[in-house]
Image (cartoon, rainbow over all chains, first blue to last red; front, side, top):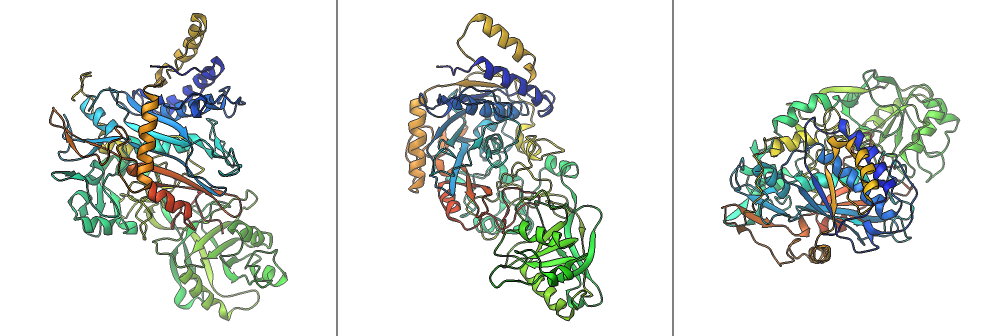
Length: 500
Length: 131
């Protein structure tokens, strides 16, 4: 065995930061994670390019900083999980698919799954390698075999052909700015490797393996389709395929996650209520997509008369230019209705704010097959008003009602707030919703929490900028799901013999 | 955190004291075991997955099958098609959005997709459509 060398400075920096992990992990949790650095000399974790300290990462070289960040992320899991068997991760940096505008950041996954091992809570059910070791208390298969493989892009942000200007941020403090937070990516990928996934195909519905050893994953014992009223393990393959694209009809039934939802997710779904003497048939309450900028939707609704914003220069896009006198007079002190397109959401909202609007409704320009509209991305810290997205069809109906308006009034009013008494990201029965978009999105479904969750969760299919590094309530539901699938079971006494 | 190095005893003692202060969080070791073989097997599995073929991530064997072990348990070696990939793209305004997908094929599709997700979270800084 060779041992990775790190500078004293790097060690001291890492030691300072692990102290912060005490508040991240479980009170008496302990699992040893072994990072098996499989990079060749001078590459990846062994890159000797000098580096300056960043965000608490004091590694003296690029390779050291990568390893310290990896260690930091692993330590969060190690401080949270309990296992009497080490969790071994094969890790490396290598050249992955990349271009100037897109790229694979990394990949990770379990190397093996096991069924019918000692103490398995469910028979004929696949468990990820690390989880099987944890439940059985025995190193399954050949001792010291890596349980997770992890691979990250060695070129990211470092040359013109791989997202130049957007390297991994190797700091430990989450202040990644426009760079990509390596710790957050690692936490997410390790989560999958530790068991946050099904091994059943969402595209074919087939269980992993071959007869007579073709089994559901432990995941499928908790994944419930409310259309059929069945767990995934009990569905036919066709039913699972349909369930994987059932939008808000796929939920998690584990008691630990369900019990933690009130402490993690916001109570109340964002919506807009349309009313007023000229509202006509459009009067009613609609779901909205919330913005990543401006004032968040809270307990006090934003109320105002709705007025549309017209495109000023042909082709310039509605709301994309500073408002002329007509648009400014229309929206001043009111709620602006602006069509999506041509320029960024934040540009439109900022122009409306500058003209005195108190809120903005962005009407979509494409049909979206979803339960609620997507959010509004972008950022501008100077925006202070609330903005939301509404469906294309709702926007069209609203414009129809606004046709009888004057230049400064419409008789149609909007109230934007939390309008539906349900946890954001849970169904009406308080069960966590899992990601099941339609059409099926290339495997990003089912093994993630739904994107409707608020607050954002580590194991949503996208990695959000506001994650906290905690995997526990009140910030996060991930560890509670791990408890559901078996990480909570008291481990048996250590046994060091191999079963193979 | 167990970060091991070859150095003087005095240095080790000093570092040990620092790490002892955070002993409750010492959960990580770093090694470099069988690196050449592990690297080769991982590369072979990922290349095979890109061609739609299955090669075991650990053994390098083609089309790994479930295997019954001596204690009655059953093991199934996985191939790179079951790995989870994180993909990033830069939008027209310079913002970066990321998404997590299962498998090599899905990652390639995500790299070409006009948008990553139909539904996005409310306070996302990276993932949402921005225009």
